[in-house]
Amino acid sequence: MTHVLVAYGSRRGSTAEIAGWIGDTLRGQGLETEVADAGSVRDVTAYDAVVLGGALYAGHWHKDARRFARRHAAALSDRPVWLFSSGPLDRSADEAEIPPVPQVARASEALGAVGHRTFGGRLARDAKGFITARIAERTGGDYRDADRVRAWAREVAELVATGHRTEV
Ligand SMILES: Cc1cc2nc3c(=O)[nH]c(=O)nc-3n(C[C@H](O)[C@H](O)[C@H](O)COP(=O)(O)O)c2cc1C
Image (cartoon, rainbow, N blue to C red):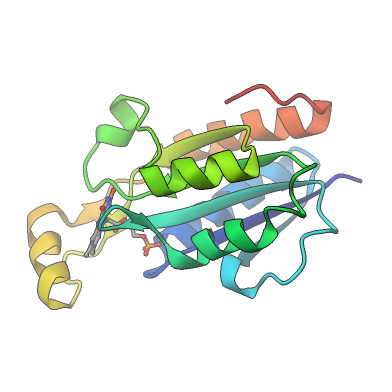
């Protein structure tokens, strides 16, 4: 059976939840799928394909996603990898394709990723922290579109199942 890993880097849990939606969708498409915190994964050799996602903070991908990409690049060189970023606190991710930030573009290159998608983010309106609270007051809310995430995951599942490596 095809075995897929969905790994995520998340600070406040919303990217972890997106990873969960992707995992559920892949399982629903008949793929054996594990969802894990990217920082906790030691070995990827058991997987046939990997989806790696990270939250965006100040233009950077979450460090666990970055480290995962670095640490496992060699092991993943012969397996398909998809990347996603979550962040925008507005509807922009639903309106147009948002390209990866430079750091993610570099990870994509290093991993030979098949595709990348940016999804909207979530920030609680009462989130604490000096800068965070100001962002939250202005643009706090949940901008994730679960249907869009699941639709992308179905495309990934189809490509994993058929062994195609065309970009989605
Ligand atoms: C201090 C701060 C900086 C952020 N910087 C960015 C950014 O540069 N780009 C972006 O798209 N989203 C940015 N966001 C929004 C987060 O990426 C969004 O809240 C995301 O859903 C967080 O994911 P998490 O809950 O998994 O940590 C920022 C949020 C905070 C609080």
